[in-house]
Amino acid sequence: MGQVISVSLDRRHRFSKAPIEEITLIAGEGVAGDAHCGVTVKHRSRARFNPTLPNLRQVHLIHAELFEELAGKGFTVGPAELGENITTSGIDLLALPTGARLTIAGAIIEITGLRNPCIQIDRFQDGLMQATLDRDADGNLVRKAGIMGIVVTGGRIRPGDAVEITLPEGPHRPLQKV
Image 1 (cartoon, rainbow, N blue to C red):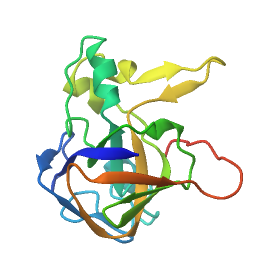
Image 2 (cartoon, rainbow, N blue to C red):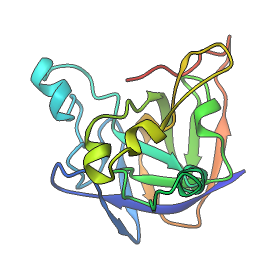
Image 3 (cartoon, helix red, strand yellow):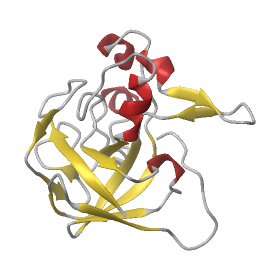
Image 4 (spheres, helix red, strand yellow):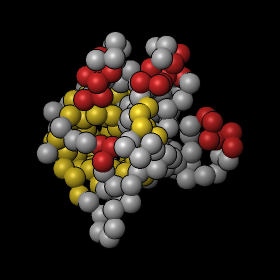
């Protein structure tokens, strides 16, 4: 079982978010007060394409272990700096299948896919985007900049909360970018 290391939000569309004491998740919308909260897509690039699409990126999660990996490559990155709402520890988020559910303090987040790193990561620290990408043994691209989810059941989440994983029934569907 993993745990929450940090929670964050930002009311404006900025790259990094501000760590805070707790966040409130709203079912079907996301993190209360965050710029990406809403039923329809809120990420600017996707909203320009089609603002009526469902918001599959209501909550952004990153595993703190990524920060350690990036430190080994010469980068200094901490919780909330890559724009995530929830930083976890002790969970291999990238290995979760589509549809996995994370229960945190009664709130439930259903995983929809991978965050697709964009050029904003390089604006934060030059070369960081490439450092969040890798290749698997078959040469397939591996995106390490976190996962995205939707809020199934709302609630309040704080650092130190335990994270319980429930895997979906049926075949394992690997995460794809959303």
